[in-house]
Length: 217
Image (tube, rainbow, N blue to C red):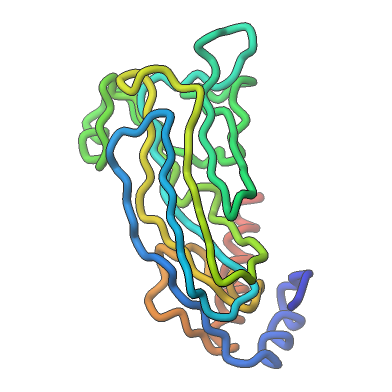
């Protein structure tokens, strides 16, 4: 495994010396689009083949009056998160990006009282929706167990007609090469099965790096 990614000849050489890389699907396109409140969605997988990493991509919807976290406001206790085999991550989310919001992904789209909101696959009582397309650009974890449990959850929300959430297009895959899984990009956009030659992986790495540089500058 290569811990450092050097874009250019170094990556091309590294990938050209690597064997054919294959990743295996665990789930493709699972959706939970009903309005959910302080509850959980748990996905459990067993009999996983040999692998070193697991990658996750999904879309996240938050509806109505999320207030983030403010210890001086009894209504600002709105958290959403997920866990992988008990390793948990959660953040405060607010409809307005401010100090009450600890969510790491600022690439969301805000829908409020406009015609486009009615094209979304979720229901909002107040016509307020935050949409995160491929939340946080996905996640890759070290993982070797033959079982996997992924849980999505929220807590501290008010009644479901005031604050709710939904997730869509959940894709999860395993693989043996971090560089390969990262180069693939968003699993939602990848055909099945995930089999890539070293040459194609090199191309994907260069394109992914160029995209990141464009975003950075």
